[in-house]
Amino acid sequence: MPTAKPVPSARQQDLLERAYAYSLTHGLADLSLRPLATAIGSSPRVLLFLFDSKDGLIRALLARARADELELLRQLDSRYDEPPGLTVVAQELWTWLAAPERRPLMKFWVEAYGRSLVAPDGPWADYGRSTVDDWLELLKASQPDPGTAEAEARRTAVLAVLRGALLDLLATGDLERTTRAVEDYLGD
Image (tube, rainbow, N blue to C red; front, side, top):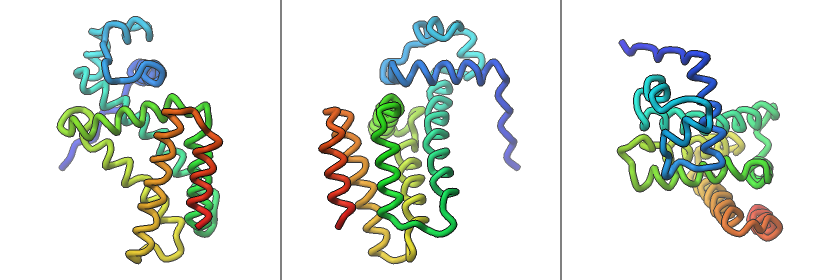
């Protein structure tokens, strides 16, 4: 019988939130515990004690970022009594993804997604796959007949367009052009 994960202490939760805010602006690629601990008012020893290891802290940060994504999915899902359609959901997703206040989270996501591809056995393990599954589930729920091969192909293409446009937006800052591209694709 699997054992339940212990509930994080208030201190652990507070430091996780602070570390998450730090990682949104500084990234995770070269995360060093000493500067992180100093910035969040802790020590490397405390972080290692609370999160077991640097990898444990990274896993906790990735879970925290994923929680933000999942909250969006829940909010979108709860706004409709019936599936609103793939185009409506994709447009709402793009608006959410492209919002300037989400750029730090989206950069964090890109970094974590990329790392999960090149370091699949480390703390990044399965991050990329799980986010793909999360977003495809949301898109699937918006389709009236999601079980067909055509519906699966369409939601996969929509996800690819959204993520490609997001990468382009993050690289160039050109919201107008990338939004036009998404809208053009969704208009088909």
